[in-house]
Length: 203
Image (cartoon, rainbow, N blue to C red; front, side, top):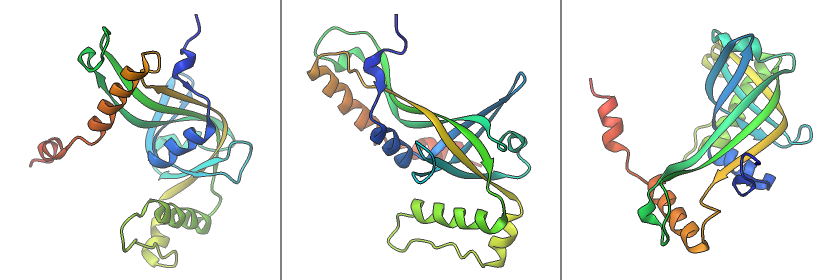
């Protein structure tokens, strides 16, 4: 038996990159001996490096994960697209409960961005990519505060060596049921989280 099922494996690299760009906050994972290091960090895709491109991000210099993000040490980044529970009531045919999701797993070799000027340039680029307002913020790399900030940040480049798309979207069902499940996933992705955020931020 093949696992994961082929119909849940995304084979179009364009859809992998689209997921990374739309959901850039990744779970970055490295391992040393029996210890796992995990950091949640936005990663920006750059197609101009290697066969599959690279990812660029930044983490706090005091994060112990830093030790493993250099010298080509292997790392994995997981990007989390939309996901939700799918009730059997959604389908037009008899089914069991399931969970649909879009995930991208990227294996990479990690190296450091060599100096503060390059780190600041990469942060400025990340900011320009992520800013979506009508009056987007522009990071001034010459700002003394930005220069000071760079002293406390490690820039990381992740050369992508392999990738896997796990797109579980009821593809094994009838076409009508696949579309019904898709509609639920879209609706859940638009869910208002005001009450949840207000609840966890209560003082």
